[in-house]
Length: 565
Image (cartoon, rainbow, N blue to C red; front, side, top):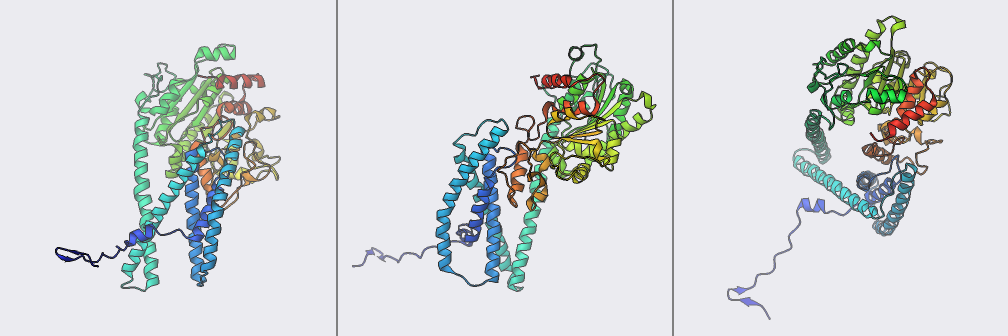
């Protein structure tokens, strides 16, 4: 029996619509080699690193690492197929079945172990335990991250294939595919570098510029002539930037200094030049020295030159501790070279901090050196994070650093610090990289490294010329591009006391783990990560303690700095 309509016989159904090339590429099944590598890499990403990770960061790390693993595995699989042209369908089917059984088991096992390691690491750093349901969020974020990266990679591959097909009309197929891949890779890199990063930097620059124009709550223009930004200063308040205004507008009062010292204190001098205070680094340095002469800074017991972080920020613990130690008989100076965060300044233009530090340290040192030796104040230098890099680059070598001032305190130095690299490479055999020891060589014997600042209290004899404070769990200190393919020395035994014994190095994986650790490096308790807190007081006491200063005074000072302010 046939079906008919008024118009006649019903036409046969249309053939199924063939999916587009784009759809076929996007919805193509996962490859075996890539899937195996993705599972291995994602499992490795759950192993501990230097700091406990928040659930969303762990998810991003897992998804990103799995995507890298998939790319590595897929590439190796393609290479094997190119060289070994035989296929084994039955073996491939068996391998898929094994993977589909093994992957969930391995994933669940590593999630359980990863949670255990994270809880142990949080306990080691005195941090709050992670919630049990964070595991679900980690899996969800990881899966979304992997899927998004895989989709982007497949769309790029589709573009390369389409371009190769087009070029294949005129050139041999191998050349067409090589050209297609090259063009797509070039355009992708150009998009990331020339569009994405440039626009991100532009947004960051505008945001930081707006922030730099503000003033922290509770900070007001000083009336004292001993501060930059005051009516008597040649560096107007509006030119100092947000961090400069906080630097000169805060600090202990004379009454607080007197109460701590137990004797009459002086009003401290604080001077600062912002980016808008003068047109160039050299001009800003000359302005600071001019301000120092105006305020009588070189008549104080101590002159401290501080190289700030990327935004121009100076840690209050650094400045307050010196002022308390010397009863306000101090003159502290600093100078802004950027208003961008340190990590952007480090990646975008390290030369700015080097130029600024060299200009300010050089100008102050020249004025100081011209004084009669008997009348000179103690000249102390300080740099934290990127600021430590700038302070180091103001000197040619370790000998120049150790002889360039009466004391140098460098905190949380990044991997690129050239003098620190040289010193650590020459440490005593057997001493760990996170706590290097020097027994004989000069100038290394004039340098002291400390993971625990309190360890500096046991030093006897001549005070060191340079003190480095570096936490063994600080990713700013220990991250380096070499982590991609090289096991770091800070994982050798003995390890730092706050580094997990379950942390191991894996190619590519540890690089990303430690890079992400930098995002939360200041969200941990003092003494861990990139947080040094009141430990700088031990650094100053080791370098340049005033007459009569005792260990009990250092303990009192640290308690004062740690108290809510």
